[in-house]
Length: 378
Image 1 (tube, helix red, strand yellow):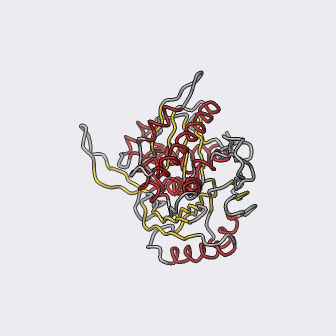
Image 2 (cartoon, one colour):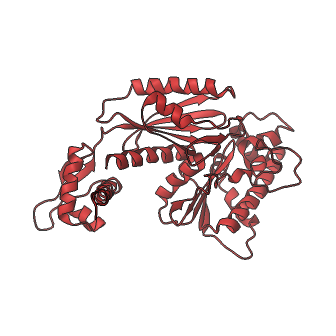
């Protein structure tokens, strides 16, 4: 075994111990040895390093099981901060969290122009303000992560945001050059899937569908995120479900799923008959059984069932989580969608509503920042 291999094993053990402390919150050295199957000497040595790195600290003593009372280890509170950015097509949501992923502040930047340079300048102004006001910590800002409602390749380059007409933007390099911290960029569906899988680790085959101004998805298979050959595996909103539809999608095709079930498309459909300003107003109309709202709701239910049926046949997923403001407000729609799903040769475990809501991509993005920070330290 060469030195590099030895270092790799040591780094892996260090990261394993750190992740164990994060997951179990308050654990002793003996607990860590039992959970990880590492020997006690290795655990003690690495714990000493993590304390010296100011990542963990010794806290209260635990209950004795007959010998000396164990000392409890916890993650330190003031290690550093991460910034998560959710780049939607109409608004940018920003969340500052500490290393424990506890939100400190959230910010909202409306997108009022399709000019990327102007939007990027406004975003940088807010990030400057956030960074200049960071509370004291050991490592300061440790990373920025961007969730994009569009096509992102494996290098983190925004290849296409159809609604904004943004193409081939290396926002990762631009942010790293300005703020001198690691930057991670991915599709919001992937980050949402990571966050949902963290809450539902028992599901090995999971699909997360986010229904907002656009429709995005995240695919977990065998407990791993599936990105595909170029990183575009989750562009589920642009699979065609009605090839006879004569209106063109923002992506250039006709009859995409997004044209029937996204919040933006639903408002477009109902506004052929009346003036509805946002999805909240639509939900109110639907709950009050407005005939136009119910007509659009029936369309939504029908096409959600078609799209989900396609995903089940293609992916053979165990569980589906839907992150939708509309379905969260009207959870009875899940039953209606269930009743329209036709599966003669396959099956799935269940469909559920996300508990994370619009925070899902921000939480997944924050998790990636923290994970990579710890990997780089170990």
